[in-house]
Length: 246
Image (cartoon, rainbow, N blue to C red):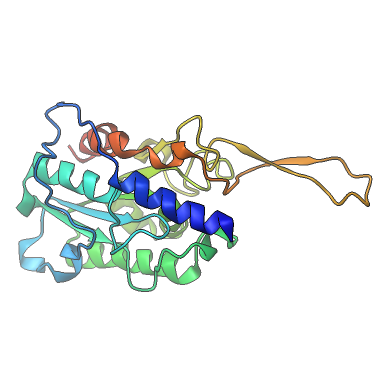
């Protein structure tokens, strides 16, 4: 389908676009520490738990388990602030293939992807119960995070100090929140020109009926603004998470 090819091309171009980083003291992104794949939670030892564990779900078609846009940028910012040894970065991979088709499922992603994210949050709690857990997602990854976090136990939710979502695909449906999760712990980044999280979808019934067009929230119509969250990932999101972590 033309939609799929355009989306894949846009993801590639946006991820490769240069980002102007504002010097706020939060992060020096001159040195990239986090790659497209990071498994520091899974490989780390419980005897060397860090101050912070960052779990991220990438956008559709992005490589690895972190992607090459928002996820690594936030991870680098946190490592720069707290030190590499004090931040574990973990991407949601394995069963979460970040395929395009899963965007059209009721939860905006697949059940296996949601369960994989839940497994990682549970692992963080089991392995390092005293570490501050923060999380993030981009595009389809936001649906992974919203659905997984909303169904975690209160004990595991309490360990999650903050969540950042870029281009939240369920933003309008969930009224800018993650169900069953404190809104004070969530920061959503949604450009006013991003139809995925800010726009509305108008559904036109068959011409054979007399029904009027229906307007409902949520659309997968991809506009350029959906790929412009790198600066938020470099500046605003790390500042928010640092404020939650302390």
